[in-house]
Figure 1: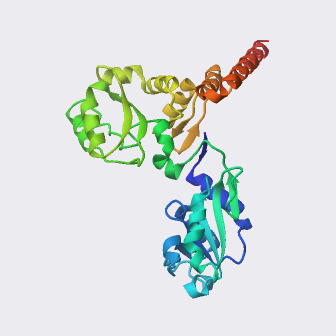
Figure 2: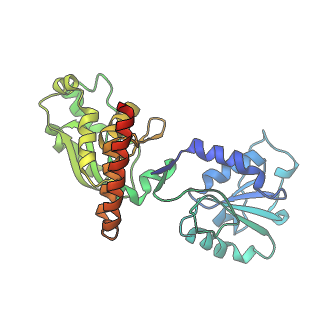
Figure 3: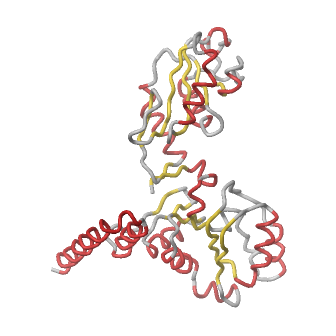
Length: 328
């Protein structure tokens, strides 16, 4: 699972900014996600910023006074070279649509199309800063990605805020929290499975809150323990979530806490995105669990069944040889 955070985005922009033509006098973002890197680039170059649809009608976004220099005093009629930016390119459809939208003004303005992240083998942009193969997910769109349908997602700390120590009393205060919890990251895609350390006895309140906020999901897995005191005593958060994720066909787990994410990845042998960071936590590639998960994914794809058998033998053979070396 290839993951890029907003910090990664900023880093690759600053690393590759020298490849932008020096005569670019405006940066135009393809809304919405393209506006994020477009803003970063415009700030770094200290040139005006625009949004693609309104730019095609002759509008440039306003600016503050701190960075006001001569090249910032740009009218639409003065634009000579525009950098059109999107965060990523997959099939190339978004950039092709952008070219069509801007075609009426293409005769008067030179345009360079830039995708920060591209897909190997597909090149429709004039500039691509980094090739990132599938499967991939970005911090800024993970809750709006079709991958959610094949993911396990935590509730507290992801969909809503975590309960405070006072709210987490397993009594009246906690019931009030379950009803009134403030939303954090609301998905626009259906979630495959919600996996939470909330107790099974709070299923009705949890389902009511999810319905209230229009969150679609396939199933809701909750911790079947009698009370919060037992849960705290057993410290079952990571083992419970990791155990379910390991047996499931889900490709990603989205977890709120980093420590739990590391534990879930270790137990499941699969990647876990911790939103505390954020950081993608990967299992130990040398572990038998991780090796078996890789084989399992191949077996589940019917067209790779024969290949999976050969890879399984090789993986198990390499693992056995490695264990012999470590023992000796």
